[in-house]
Image 1 (cartoon, protein in one colour):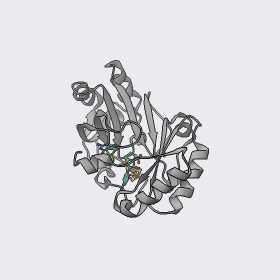
Image 2 (cartoon, rainbow, N blue to C red):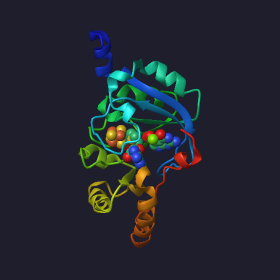
Image 3 (cartoon, rainbow, N blue to C red):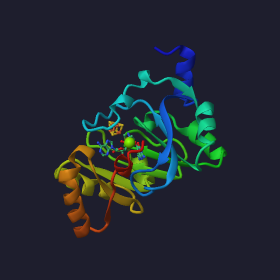
Image 4 (tube, rainbow, N blue to C red):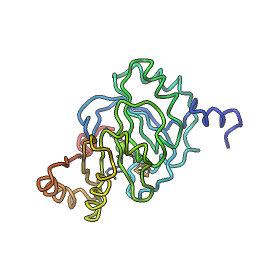
Length: 210
Ligand SMILES: C[S@@+](CC[C@H](N)C(=O)[O-])C[C@H]1O[C@@H](n2cnc3c(N)ncnc32)[C@H](O)[C@@H]1O
Ligand SMILES: Nc1nc2[nH]cc(C(=O)O)c2c(=O)[nH]1
Ligand code: SF4
Ligand SMILES: [Mg+2]
C-alpha cells in the first residue's frame, strides 16, 4: 500500500510506477531502427495472453518515481523518448510529457489505447487489443496502427481496427513473437495483396538488444 501522500502524487501524474528505462533502438513500427530512450511504466489490466512484458502488469511491484527524476535521466540520452509499459495511459501522462517537451525531447507513446488519451505526443503508436478496445480519443490521434497477428482471425480484426482509426494513420501488421514462423509468411502474402498495410517485425529481438 502506498502512503496517502504518494498516492496523491500518482493520481496527479507527478509520480509514476517506473519499471525500467533503457537507451536502445526502436525495434518496431514506423520509427524502426532509430535510437530512442525507453521509459517503461508499470501497470496494465488489458491481459494479453502473449504479452512479452507480463512483469509490468502489477503496478505495485514498481516504485512510484517522480517525473522530475525520470525526465532528468531521459534528457541525458537521445533526442527521442518512447513511453511504454505496461499500459502508460493507465496514468495521467500530462506532467511527464510536458516536462519532456520542455527539454526539447520528441515524445512517443506505445499504447493499447484502452484508456483515454492524456499528454502531448509527437508520435502515437496504437496497438489495439480485442480484450479492451481502444477509446475514441486514441483512434482519432494515432499516427500508426500496429496490429499483432497471433492467428488468422487477427487479419479480420486488423481490418476492423483500420476502419476505426483516423485515415492518416500508417498501418502495420506485426507477428506475435511465439507465432512468427507460422504468421510471418501469411503477413507477407497479406501485405502484397493489401498494400495499404506494411510489415513490422520486433527487430530488437533479432538484434538481441533490449
Ligand atoms: C508491451 S506493449 C506496451 C504498450 C501497450 N500496453 C501496448 O500494448 O501497446 C508494447 C508493444 O509490444 C507489442 N507486443 C507485446 N507482446 C508482443 C508479442 N508477444 N509479440 C509481438 N508484439 C508484442 C504490443 O502490441 C505493443 O505494440
Ligand atoms: N527495442 C525495443 N523497441 C520497442 N518498441 C516497442 C517496445 C515496447 O515494449 O513498447 C520496444 C522494446 O521493448 N524494445
Ligand atoms: S496491453 Fe500491452 S502491456 Fe498490456 S498486456 Fe497487452 S501487450 Fe502487454
Ligand atoms: Mg517490447
